[in-house]
Image 1: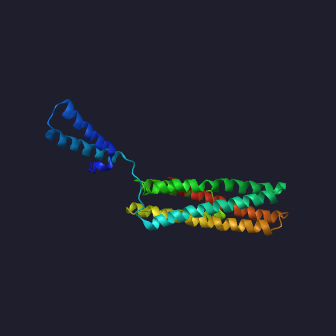
Image 2: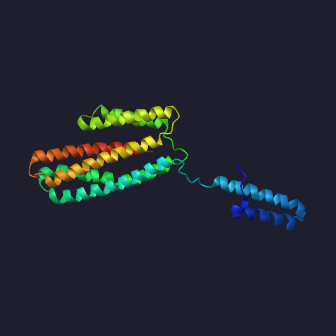
Image 3: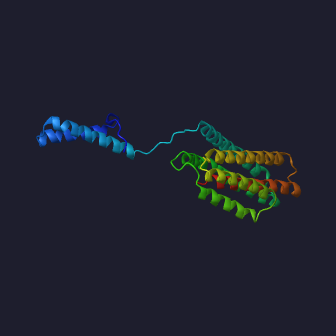
Length: 240
């Protein structure tokens, strides 16, 4: 246990003072004997208190700190963009053949709204003592992606293949003992950017398309499905 300065810990100083008082006044021991004993008690108490303190994380990697902060801002921007799209969709999509699209946009909006809190939790975990994602956790994530790949097609399968490739690279880093935190945050950042682009396409189509045309509604539904796939991939990466 590391010895620390007891002056930084009032309780440790108090413990030393009480032991000095008890020794000299009650036990009638010489002060020359009790002074080093009391000092020792104060030192040990301070060391114990320091040991029991929760360890605040320090951002030892400035690049990682910048990327985490950027991802947090990007997630908040994504929430705002998604909410604006949802409000516009509620006003414009009222016919029965448009309900499926509206429902999908609502569900995606709900899921996107949870991302900032999830990323905050992830950021804390990244800077905790268990900050480097374990090999077993990466293997589990990769297994989940490969399982989804077997039942996916089209754009969703393309996104999953990209995610699988990223996870394989991160797994190799982890197996080599490298820090995978930055790579993980960059992957999340890339997915958020992709989501932002799709939301922009959806908003443009919602404003400029003929909403009475079932084909154009279908094209928007495909974009919404692509957004769903990306959000699911983000959820996978933000898991502890």
